Image (cartoon, rainbow, N blue to C red; front, side):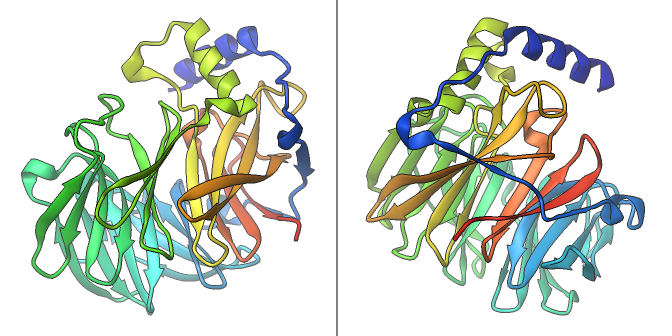
Length: 332
């Protein structure tokens, strides 16, 4: 892994250029107001993902199969789960949600969702039928349904009934962007539309509740995403091994804002790149760019390893390169 990371950095450095910014992409530098190593040094965590909870965030721990919940100051306040394959155990806790005082956590290696009460006590687990087990992300859709983004199937997503434990329907037929197990993030809006963010083929698609496509937006019009696509082209990567043009996305249900994390080629910031956060406003099945932020300090060894979430105007980001956790405050 260290050798591959070194080769990636060398290639990236050779191909970097000063990105051009459009008028609506004026970059605002954000310095972290909290930087801590306590999750790694004290709790011995190797985070795989971060998701929001009211008043803080939760961090999935790959090595120990658990979830650590923090307050807004990144102080641990609740730890639940353990490594294994039994009830309440997880092999690779990743994406999650906290809804109505329940935690829904995707155990990626076991192809299912673990459900815990607000006190961290295990309640039940949901496994996906074997023929649909190659999913990578999920989103809660109402109280009883889950949307899965698919990997090897010719669909964008599947709707799964949590009570009946069966696939209800699928959407996005014939629109599989790439043979990959990480095709997209899924986000549900307050008007029950579904936002799909493709990482490698950078697009944002919006479907309504009947799976009718309302928006199909090519994100290459934004300069930092375009620069990453150009790097991929020059580097000669095979399609199935392309670095991610969009490394992650989050959606704030309160403000209805979509956040896209993107690599940026800035050698002056700790290595060959920094990380840029695009902030879009969602309204009536459209997204409009509000702000472009450069997160100073936090970096990553490869794009997918900078995991983040947004809660109450704060960005929480795990830096796998330096093993630190960062909190940034977004301007009002």
